[in-house]
Structure formats: structure tokens, C-alpha cells
Image (cartoon, rainbow, N blue to C red):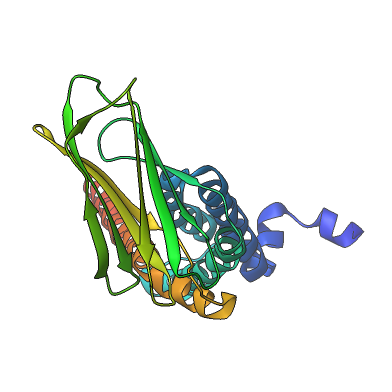
Length: 250
């Protein structure tokens, strides 16, 4: 331990750069994932590429090929960790979930029963923060995931929001086993207020649900990987520009 303390910081990092890089890339990224899963802070997931890049930079990994070689596997690991954290939370979550809408306000949606076989599944959506002087045309739809095949759809009569909120509910019968997306929509003259998200599983075991969630998060972590790669090329371009300016200034 004394020998380690006597080593200069840069020498210590260089000798142990794979471990130091992995720790400083993964730990902040997992924190971002936890904040998203438990508090819905979606935008923090897009800080993951910056966390990886900064960790590579300060542990002495240079060049696009080297950074791709070390960064992409970390993104894959984070994709698996994200699923491992999210599945236990969402699989046993029998309460409602509140999501922001595409406009103003929020909507709380639930399915009962949440898991297990049932001939009838009750789906409800409670919108809040609505304008009270607007006529809405509400609807509820449930889609099988991940193929988005329309399983059932129900349209309600035109109505206005009572005290800025509106409650919708409908019983869907004989839904096949699987995981579902629920979409609740309020159409009105100015457009629509809608939300769509995973809300299941219905009669789905945890192993198959885990596989589904892994598949479901591919686009999200694919986008994170694309942002990371784009950042590498932008950083190289800026570095080359700075080098040329320094050369011409002599």
C-alpha cells in the first residue's frame, strides 16, 4: 500500500488503466440508469457516452479504434445491467405508473391484474392537468409487444375534463399471454395528448419478460452507441483543427 501511495498519480493510472477506466466509466453510468429507472430522469441516459469518453481520455486511451474497442463493450455491459436492474422493478410492479404526456399534464395508467392468467384485464388511464374548456375525444388501445399488433381498441364519447382531470377505463377480455403496450389518447381540435409505454407483463414468466426487455432496450442503447461514435469523430475533428491552427501559428 505504501508503494502505491508513493507512485505519481499519472503513473498509477497508466499501470492500472483498464481497471480505472472500467470503474470510472461504469459507476457513473449505472447511477444515471438508476436515476432513470427510479425517478424517470430519461435525459441522464444520454450522459453515458460522455462518461465513457471522459474516462477514456483521462486514462490515456487515444485514437478512435482504441476508444471503440474499449467503449462499445462497456455500452453492451451497461445495456445488460440496465435490463437486470429494470426487470425486477417492472415485473413485480403491481401499482400504477405515471408518465408525462406529449403535451401538458400527466397520465397515470394501470392494468389489473398485472400478471397471471385472467379472462378480463381492466385498463385505466387518469389524465391530470387538462384544460377545462376543451372537448376531448378519448380512446384506449392495447398492443402486443414488441410487434405492435393491435389487440384491442376502444373509443369513448366526446367529453370535457372535469376539474382539469379525466378518467378512462375499459375491460379487455381474452388477451393472449405476453407483454403489452398501452396507449391512451385524447384527441381535440388543437391536436392530441397521448402516451405509450410498456405496461405488463400479462401472463408472462420473468425469464421471457427479461428477454423481451433486452430486445426492447436495443434501440435505446443503439442510440447511445451512435452518440458515442459520433462524439469520437467530433473530438478527433476538433483535435485535428487545433493541431493545424497551432502549426500555422508558428
